[in-house]
Image (cartoon, rainbow, N blue to C red; front, side):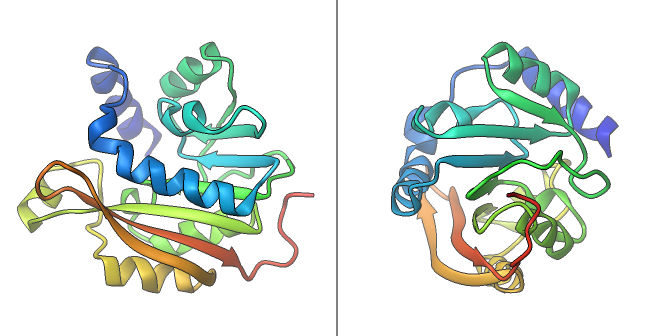
Amino acid sequence: MQNLYEEQAQLELVELKKVDNEFHQPRFNKLLEWIDTIQPSTLLDIGCSWGYVMEIVPRSIKVIGIDISPTKVIYCRKLGFDVFQLDILTEQLPKKFCELVVAMELLEHFNEPIEVAKRCAKYGRHIIFSTPVYSTDEEAVDNKFHLRHILPTEHLEIVSQVGKVREFTVVKSPQEGTAWSMSLVETYETNNLCS
C-alpha cells in the first residue's frame, strides 16, 4: 500500500500548490468550528498528507501528524511539524496525548473503512472524519487512490460504530458537484492509546 501512496505523492509533488482556499474553505471552516467547540490542547492528524490541516489549526494546539508517504512526511517536517511515517493499519503510533483526532479524506483509501475508523478511535476521545461525496459514480472511479466511494449514509454508519455522532453534515464547495461528508464523533473507546 505504501508504494501506491508514494506514487500519489510523487505525482502531487510535481504540481504542489497552496490549497485552493475557495474550493476547500467550507470544509476547513467546519473543521475549525468543531475544533473551537472541543478546545483541544493536542490534535493528531491521521493521513496528514501535505500538512493542509496542520497549517490552519490554531498555533496554541500541539499538532502531531502521521502519513504513510515518506515524501509527505519529509515535506511536513520541513514545515516544522511533528510528523511520523507509519501505516495506520499495521503500525502503532508512539504513545502520545491527543484530545482530538482528525481523519480528513482517509476512510475512502481503504477497503475496510470500519477497521480504519476503529484504529483512529484508539488515539483520542473525539474524532473528526471527512470523506468526499462524488456527484457521479464515474467521478469516484476516476480516482485510483480511492478504493471506495463512501456515500453520506455509509459515512454515518461507519463512524457510528466507533462512537456517538455529535454532529454530521454534508459540506458543499462553491465548485459544482463537490462536497464532503463530515462528522464529529465522541469515541466509545475508554482506554485509548493517548494519555
